[in-house]
Image 1 (cartoon, one colour):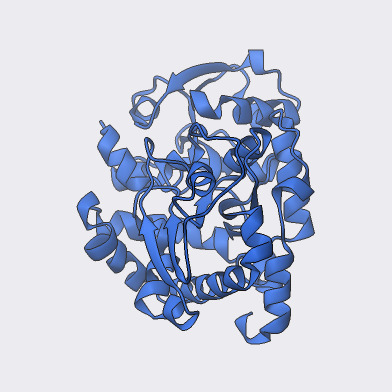
Image 2 (cartoon, rainbow, N blue to C red):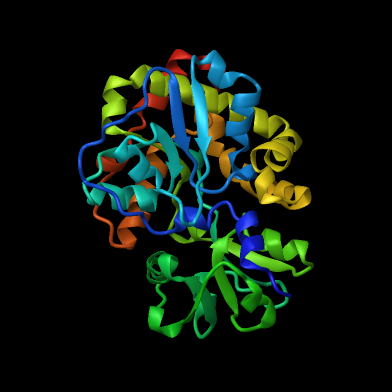
Length: 341
């Protein structure tokens, strides 16, 4: 079974999001976004992982918030959200905590103000016929790991008392065919990507999340400049209000979110409807969790913030919670608008 790189790119919502930080200047942010017309940098190609954004446009939630939002597609070779904010190309965007932390360490003044996913889809996948269910099961096994993900993978092992030297890492890229062909025993990827792609090809898999074994992190986070947090706070609240409503719509009507991805926003990607629905089905439980049911969509609970910073620390990051997150915008927003919950 051969899955082309292009096919893998169409399916994944998160492989590119985990790619290395694009080069960016440490100079202070200087947004060129003016008024209520803003550019939003997506962390990946326009597929169904951004269903909430599509519905926020189509159902008029951005408009009702007084905003006009231009969605800019990302990709493996695209400009990072952090660099886009730093150069003023974009006002807001989605990213990963790893990339935001790396940008902050490079001197880029950005903060995370919310998260689409309360739990990262990062996982270890193995064939259902030979399931590996815990990090300790990886001892003596061959695991396909992309270069950019190696620090996080090694952190997973050490966090669970596994000597990284006891696991044979096989460098891989996007195509999970080595797992099907038996060249590796397991694959480090995302529950929203490789298991979805392989299932569509008739290859059954078993997966466990990094987050269930000491490396819980939020994902698809919303990033703005520190300047926007102070000077454009009302705009931040307006934007997040529209986002919450858009993702509520996606949870209520996932088929419409899929249709918009396939037929309109991601039409140039030639996305497959069934695969996109499977991707969204795998994503929605990471969005609507016990925490977000209690606190509201996109929120950053103290536990989630602590877990994310701890996980990043295991990979060598020195960024603190205060440097990385500002949960106060959403806290204030929900306090002011109880009906949003």
